Length: 280
Image (cartoon, rainbow, N blue to C red; front, top):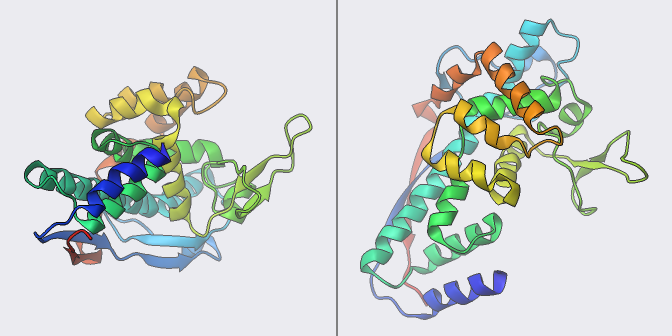
């Protein structure tokens, strides 16, 4: 597949183009923070959220249940919103390229490189499929899965490696943590991340790349309703429908769907005009 992508995009790059174009990118200026104790977790007081990205967390084990759940949401939600926004910005850029190609059958150099990296990352070769893979799902589902996988921030992997979703590592060259218990005679490792945002980004990328979630992605592209999407995550866990039933119950009982309408505060957006040079 990589050869096909290279061939397609090389064609765009090699053809000369005399027109110019710009793309206005709006990024989030994150506020990086470290948590030494639970008092360092910034409260979320309303639906407009400051984009705190936590690079170090503490275990929430031992806290009263209600406090543990609230602190967990406050740790996770800013990173989820930042990750979601970044994905929507990528979709906007892809649609800009798509629109450009309708009247200019030659791609700008920066656009072609941008698109190539996305095709490679998301394991596809067509723009319509790429947009499907990029589209994020509601925060309630992400929070619900994060809570299930980390025990509401109580797991060792969460505390030591910012690994919210228990995502495994198969690459000895990446930062990772060995699980205390293996499977049969096989050692198990999970990834270690530099921040909560990295963990969330990797989670979204995993959902976007893995073939097992194709049906989920197709439905996600046309629906924002969490309870229509949840049953299609039955391949996320070995326990299948039991897992999705647990996820649905957790989201309902903790009213997590209210966070689906939360957004990043306007104060933290930065606009940048990208000049797209002509192809070489």
